[in-house]
Image (cartoon, rainbow, N blue to C red; front, side):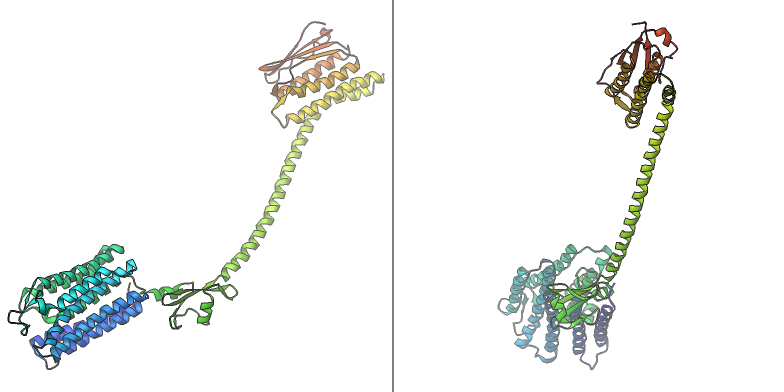
Length: 520
């Protein structure tokens, strides 16, 4: 979308072209007393001046700006030479002939500078082949008097109004057409554009081709020639082509940059080479401050910083306002403290929950131990009330050893699903030591380096205690053999086994068996 200023400029240029064409058409059918060629020159000169002002406004790069201004100057010189030739020069004078030759000199200069501007825009260097070939063609045109390879004068050089086109003329015009087409297709190659927008520059190219065809066709009346003289059509084609390239963004310019900069939240500003403010987003920024900010960021006030950079044609700067970020940082810091406090509270709650769970588990284990050893504790209490004291205390020691070791096994089993048989062996040894102190003889054989389930260990030790308590009154001699073959098997042989036959055979979830056999 074009800016408002660009639309006004294009509308004004169309008005100039329309007025000039209307004057030519009226003068063809009804000759006017006014000098139409002078008025036409004024109209097209005004159009060229508007284009030059627009170039100064829409382009920042100096090299592109100079080339486009030079292109406009060639068109302006062409118009002036044509007007002076028809209004002030003699018909058959030498200067008149060279003024005519200079038309093509201006034409070559116009197309060359336009091509150089496009080439320079994308390649950042001057196209030497364009310059050399244009100079060669210019010399070729201006020396036509010597070779007449462009225009041939059958009636002599002094009657140059009677001429014919030669091969050189078509070479020059072909060169102009090739350079013009190169300029167009080079922009298409460098820029991506919607296909429907390509029609705008193509219209002007086709318009120029149609004019050339009608000019050499000899059609009478030729309304193309009536409405537009060659210099007029050159102004329309070149300026129209440039405006269409700019409008379709095939030729980049800074149109709309002012609006973009003013709408930006970065507060961008520009100084030109003379130190004048081109765009000023905020009062109070001087050129000295901008130059100071070239090396280091310049703080302005709380939360605002000035950044600047030197450009080819001045200085650019922008003001970075981070006050909102500072406020947000403070809020985030307070939020961080709140979250850390909440996290600490959650960790404390989790620790309390873990400790409560562990305490509940320990309480459950202690309750289970108390429940599973209540019979032994009751027997201890009963023995302590019985005489003689020496024998009862030894029996109580056997029961106490069992309670102690069973509690240890029970606590260990709550943490591990499998236990080493060495743990069970140590429990047996402590109970056997108490039994031997009581006067019983016990022999134990069992594996020490085998892993069995915790349930098997607890059940095995509980069965052992039941048999021991049954054998205590007789002080029976016992032999205990424990083996492991997929299941833990305990075999007990005891003297006077008939007196302990009432002890039941235990089976704990199908994994523990024991049997007693015969007498020692």
